[in-house]
Amino acid sequence: MRQTIRVERLLRESVQTTYCDLVTRSTGRAVRASIEQVLASAGAAEQVALLDFSEVGLVDLSCADEIVAKLLQDPPRLTFLVLQGLREEQLEAIEHVLEHRDLAALVSDSADGTARIVGRVSPDLRSAFLSLQSTGPATAAQLAERLGWPLSQAGEALDSLLRMRLARSADGLFIAPLSA
Amino acid sequence: MSRVLEIPAAFDDRTFETFAQTFSQGPLTERLLFDARAAQWASPFGLVAMLTAAQAIREAGGPTPVFTVPNADEVRRYWTKAGFFHHAADLFEIHGRVPRIKPDERSDVLLDVTPVRASEDVHTVVGKIQEGAARILHEELRLEAKATMGFAMALSEACQNIVEHAGTSGWVAVHAYTFRKRLGRRVVVIAVSDAGVGFRRSLEATQARRFGDRWGDGAALEAAVIQNVSRFRDPGRGQGIAGIKRYLSRWAGKLSIRSGTARIAIVPPWDDDQPMIEHLAPFPGAQVQIVIPAQEGSGS
Image (cartoon, rainbow over the protein chains, first blue to last red):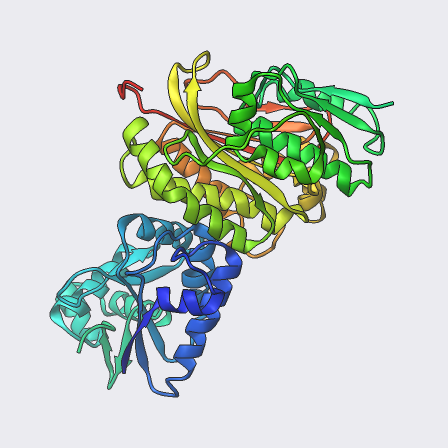
């Protein structure tokens, strides 16, 4: 299941503001709680949630930390988060908080429906993710073969991607969340 | 009889020390007279500092101080335009005539004196500033368009220090003007001030032991500004000041924070300020100043 959550709409509903800026920790907490509520209402199914920032104005560090970093740190069960619609300076604020907390997120900023990793991850994880996304789902053995890695290296990278919710798994295959 | 506090003729973050010295020389329960008759100019720092002093008097249970308005008509007009008298009327007994002035959208006052009490006020401040800031930062200071967002972010984080840490309300103001002596260029100055607990008391419970005998206002500022420490144990805290520093480093800006008896500054190459000054006259709460200069070669 895939659902798009318009962050600006939740902002207006959560804090009754006439502005579209994601600023302050208390605003961040309120918006995060609303996002969690929306995600919880999806039930027990695995889901990819696209957090859409397109109508949002400013994103400050405190609010980015409360929303993005805390959702990634303690993600709702069976949920894979992807950020989209971010402008350069908004992404910069989010990258700052991710790096501060040693986290990484998926950002989709292209029309072809692909995503990239922002934040703090090792080059191995980036390579593994890119391979899953560009070449398709893979087992650890298949990824090892594609990248010319030992099996253990591929296995570790895929386990980390799974743990960080940067990849999902089904039928023994590891899959980039936005892959069909 | 009232104790007289003379407002410096040019009231900015430097002359503030003379003001703080006089302010600290007696109890806040004394009748005080803020004498601004000879005032010629005040930076946003000076304006919010006067309101902070009056707020501290009120919170200490002192009698309402008297404020004598500047003799110079243009100073009275500028301070009115900057929103100072609107808020001063709640805190002072104003002596003298204050003009009525229509707002000027192309004014150098990017943000008139605005109270910061809660998260909603930060939304208001950020919402109000963006259009004017874009014009000044881009057209006058020749900063890239994207610098406006970083500017609003820095403003937001500075205001949030009040909401999150001060334990009381505070004030913010943003003006653009020319730093003739120090820089010879246009600058945008953000001033944020509160009469709250200050950095030392805010951080005492979590940091005092680590610093041992060194603990004081200076050490608290060092912890917050240099080490990005917050009173909260959440590792995601302390990013606000770090974010402000990062933004300022990109545009050769300056950050200074005064709290209690100390003042810390992140000093850019164009300024000769001291990074840390201790043993100053005590003043309530915290006063933050952010200066963003026109980029070199902008002709401003």
